Image (cartoon, rainbow, N blue to C red):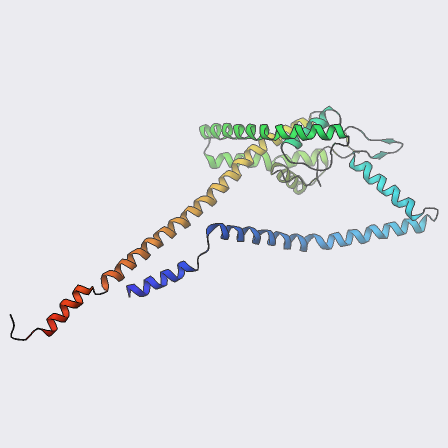
Length: 298
């Protein structure tokens, strides 16, 4: 029976994959899950939007026969290029202000925090070269500062609150409350504000929602500065949350390793059991001599 159990354990061990391979498979599976979900949710809307754009174009050309197709295409491309540079038409004037001191400060924050919304980027060669060196030294500085702020937040919270209460408080301050501010100033829904908050603090930074970019609104001078401070402390808090999640995953991996170690110990015990249960050559020889011994012998 011991031998049968040992064979079963050895068979299960042969089918185990290394932990790194399992992690890689889980990672690829998670990416495939996300790819399938986004494909199913976004592709129909994208197709509808493209069809609507073509329909609007042909209706415009049909209503205004003086317009020519190539000229309209060049005009549209010029509008897109101007919008990417931060310019929009407002009657007979254009909007400015993305590269004023406050706007440049907000861009600097988004650069060294690696958020990179993509809605604003340097256009001159000198600014692009400066941005390279600015980010090269600014990103490590930002990581050091975030680590220090996170440690201070954690130690300060430990003196007042438990770690769980500190995480819940941070969730309230950095994710649940800011969407109300964005709803008031930007006119977003609460869901859009919450989406922007998480995308920003996690440094995903898609750029589909960015504060202070609506040319029809007048923003307070303190708005971008306040959001910059919120980004700095919010990223430090979210880094703590991610670190906690990593710790939980590593602990679960340690539990698996502990289970494997116990399984190996059980396998070794079963192998020892097999060795002890099998007859030794000396025992076999002694048994044979006993069987062949004459009945009258002492």
